Amino acid sequence: MVVAERDSAGRSHYELVKEYFRSHRIADYDVSQYYDDVSEYYDRSQDRLTALFYKGDRSMRESGFDPSDRFGPFSIDIIHYNLACLNSLLYLMETQTVEIMEILGSDAAAQLWRGRAKDRAGALTG
Image 1 (tube, rainbow, N blue to C red):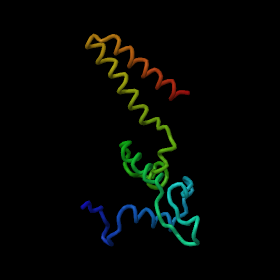
Image 2: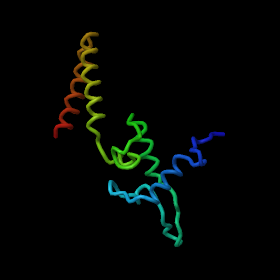
Image 3: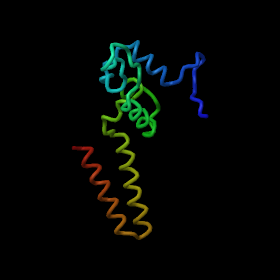
Image 4: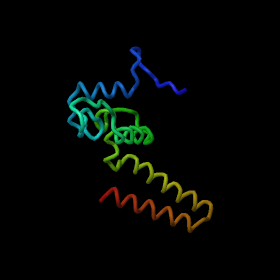
Protein backbone atom coordinates (compact mmCIF):
# COMPACT_ATOMS: atom_id res chain seq x y z
CA MET A 1 0.00 0.00 0.00
CA VAL A 2 1.34 3.44 -0.96
CA VAL A 3 0.92 6.06 1.73
CA ALA A 4 0.91 9.68 0.58
CA GLU A 5 2.94 12.23 2.49
CA ARG A 6 0.62 14.04 4.91
CA ASP A 7 0.81 17.12 7.09
CA SER A 8 0.28 17.13 10.87
CA ALA A 9 -3.51 17.25 10.33
CA GLY A 10 -3.38 14.19 8.04
CA ARG A 11 -3.98 16.13 4.79
CA SER A 12 -2.19 15.13 1.59
CA HIS A 13 -0.58 17.63 -0.78
CA TYR A 14 -3.57 17.37 -3.10
CA GLU A 15 -6.05 17.99 -0.29
CA LEU A 16 -4.06 21.12 0.58
CA VAL A 17 -4.15 22.22 -3.07
CA LYS A 18 -7.95 21.87 -3.16
CA GLU A 19 -8.22 23.83 0.09
CA TYR A 20 -6.03 26.56 -1.40
CA PHE A 21 -8.21 26.76 -4.53
CA ARG A 22 -11.33 27.02 -2.36
CA SER A 23 -9.94 29.80 -0.18
CA HIS A 24 -7.83 31.98 -2.52
CA ARG A 25 -8.55 34.12 -5.54
CA ILE A 26 -6.07 33.23 -8.29
CA ALA A 27 -5.41 35.67 -11.12
CA ASP A 28 -2.41 33.89 -12.68
CA TYR A 29 -4.48 31.36 -14.64
CA ASP A 30 -8.00 30.04 -15.14
CA VAL A 31 -8.46 27.82 -12.08
CA SER A 32 -11.43 26.03 -13.66
CA GLN A 33 -8.94 24.22 -15.92
CA TYR A 34 -7.39 22.60 -12.86
CA TYR A 35 -10.04 22.52 -10.15
CA ASP A 36 -13.67 21.49 -10.60
CA ASP A 37 -15.71 22.96 -7.79
CA VAL A 38 -19.15 22.81 -9.39
CA SER A 39 -20.86 19.73 -10.78
CA GLU A 40 -22.49 20.25 -14.16
CA TYR A 41 -25.25 17.82 -13.16
CA TYR A 42 -25.93 18.68 -9.52
CA ASP A 43 -26.02 21.88 -7.57
CA ARG A 44 -23.21 20.85 -5.26
CA SER A 45 -19.44 21.00 -5.11
CA GLN A 46 -17.32 18.41 -6.88
CA ASP A 47 -14.20 19.56 -5.03
CA ARG A 48 -11.83 17.67 -7.28
CA LEU A 49 -8.65 18.37 -9.17
CA THR A 50 -8.97 17.85 -12.92
CA ALA A 51 -6.87 15.56 -15.09
CA LEU A 52 -5.18 18.69 -16.47
CA PHE A 53 -4.09 19.63 -12.94
CA TYR A 54 -2.30 16.30 -12.55
CA LYS A 55 -0.72 16.70 -16.00
CA GLY A 56 0.55 20.16 -15.03
CA ASP A 57 1.74 18.90 -11.66
CA ARG A 58 3.71 16.03 -13.24
CA SER A 59 5.08 18.32 -15.95
CA MET A 60 6.32 20.84 -13.39
CA ARG A 61 8.03 18.12 -11.37
CA GLU A 62 9.52 16.35 -14.40
CA SER A 63 10.86 19.64 -15.76
CA GLY A 64 13.25 19.85 -12.83
CA PHE A 65 11.70 23.02 -11.43
CA ASP A 66 11.19 23.31 -7.74
CA PRO A 67 7.50 23.52 -6.83
CA SER A 68 7.46 27.31 -6.59
CA ASP A 69 4.83 29.74 -7.86
CA ARG A 70 6.83 30.64 -10.95
CA PHE A 71 3.91 29.73 -13.20
CA GLY A 72 1.16 30.63 -10.75
CA PRO A 73 0.24 28.70 -7.62
CA PHE A 74 1.72 25.21 -7.75
CA SER A 75 3.30 26.01 -11.20
CA ILE A 76 0.69 23.80 -12.88
CA ASP A 77 0.22 26.31 -15.69
CA ILE A 78 3.70 25.31 -16.92
CA ILE A 79 2.04 23.19 -19.63
CA HIS A 80 1.09 26.37 -21.49
CA TYR A 81 4.67 27.62 -21.87
CA ASN A 82 7.64 26.73 -24.02
CA LEU A 83 10.26 27.49 -21.43
CA ALA A 84 13.32 29.37 -22.58
CA CYS A 85 15.34 28.15 -19.61
CA LEU A 86 14.75 24.48 -20.46
CA ASN A 87 15.46 25.18 -24.12
CA SER A 88 18.64 26.99 -23.11
CA LEU A 89 19.83 23.86 -21.32
CA LEU A 90 18.92 21.70 -24.31
CA TYR A 91 20.82 24.08 -26.61
CA LEU A 92 23.88 23.82 -24.38
CA MET A 93 23.66 20.02 -24.38
CA GLU A 94 23.28 19.97 -28.19
CA THR A 95 26.35 22.18 -28.69
CA GLN A 96 28.34 20.06 -26.26
CA THR A 97 27.28 16.95 -28.16
CA VAL A 98 28.65 18.58 -31.32
CA GLU A 99 32.00 19.00 -29.58
CA ILE A 100 32.00 15.37 -28.41
CA MET A 101 31.14 14.07 -31.88
CA GLU A 102 33.92 16.18 -33.40
CA ILE A 103 36.42 14.80 -30.89
CA LEU A 104 35.26 11.28 -31.75
CA GLY A 105 35.63 12.04 -35.46
CA SER A 106 31.94 11.51 -36.22
CA ASP A 107 31.34 14.36 -38.64
CA ALA A 108 27.84 13.19 -39.63
CA ALA A 109 26.66 13.06 -36.01
CA ALA A 110 28.30 16.43 -35.28
CA GLN A 111 26.48 17.95 -38.24
CA LEU A 112 23.17 16.47 -37.06
CA TRP A 113 23.57 17.96 -33.56
CA ARG A 114 24.81 21.27 -34.97
CA GLY A 115 21.59 21.48 -37.00
CA ARG A 116 19.47 20.71 -33.94
CA ALA A 117 21.22 23.42 -31.93
CA LYS A 118 20.77 25.91 -34.77
CA ASP A 119 17.06 25.08 -35.07
CA ARG A 120 16.56 25.51 -31.32
CA ALA A 121 18.44 28.83 -31.27
CA GLY A 122 16.27 30.03 -34.15
CA ALA A 123 13.09 29.03 -32.35
CA LEU A 124 14.18 30.87 -29.21
CA THR A 125 15.07 34.10 -30.96
CA GLY A 126 11.98 34.13 -33.12
